[in-house]
Image: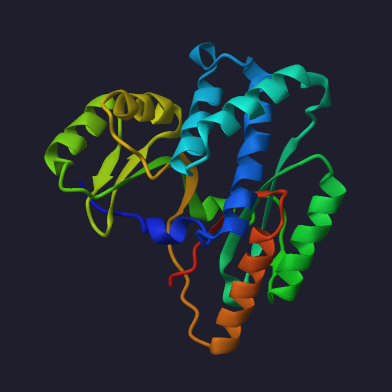
Length: 241
């Protein structure tokens, strides 16, 4: 299998501090609410909810917090009005950036995202201006461990429908088509494989390098401002760092 992506660069990785963890839990709580509204509170009959629960567990969200979020969403279906919106634009030197938000106020979100691009030395673009430079894929990351047999993991993933398997770096990376993601994730979960990350993501086809210190500072400011926004669900970019 060929290693064709840089998982460390697929998404701006947040620091594992308490503030970042709280933000991640807030976003996942919204995703749980949207999944419950769309398909009900029973994960056995709601594959989207199963996927979000798996994401929550991969981010160390406590089980009681997950269950509480699902029950709360089930009891307040009429109040769940989050909207998924994708913004696209450019950072310094044309770095491609995609921002997915989950919001109950799209005017607020648009203003905040636009401000982040502006203060980060970039600019928002029109829909589709950079997304063609990425491939939408399911991505599963498994931490390397002496108890995990690489060959066996690769065969389990491929037999379940994975497209690619990469053993470079500190993680095993499993790539799937979006439609096959749930089946592959569930097969690995049933096999007792603990996943560090499991979600649909956007993988850059090419990468852009920044060499000027000022450009790097601006790009970091852009990403930090987006990370601090509770409406922002995911940020994807093609910065080669």
